[in-house]
Image 1 (cartoon, rainbow, N blue to C red):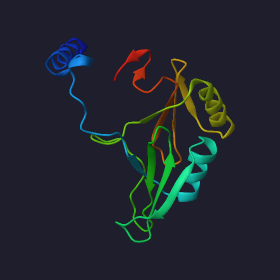
Image 2: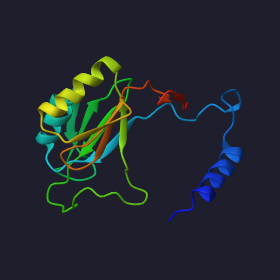
Image 3: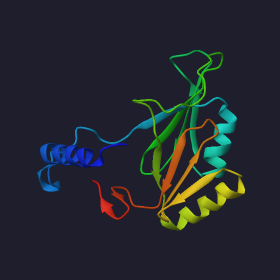
Length: 163
């Protein structure tokens, strides 16, 4: 069994050593997330899922400069952010797997009034999903990547400011 007391103490130590109050934090060197890239085993199936089910418009579909024959395609997920995909025809990249240093899940903020509609779309499309706390819905995309749609505003999580 995990000693949560020791884990809590470690979290407190890290927070004390590294977390500065909002007014004391330096400005980030980053402008924002340009895109997150995932792997797709079927470009058209991925487009139908992200554009038709989730409502994220496809914005571009080009050849991947790093692998001849591979596609690199992008979806608008709002606020100037993109979700991108590669396919790698002819390579056996294997199924999605959670690994240390890998993707656990991708959380995408949606307007609260759209959240219920998107949960209904998942149901209509037969996508297994699980709702948590009335504002988060978790599901897997066609290739197994875990996605969360969260109705909390950007910079907040379950009513707590995280930015």
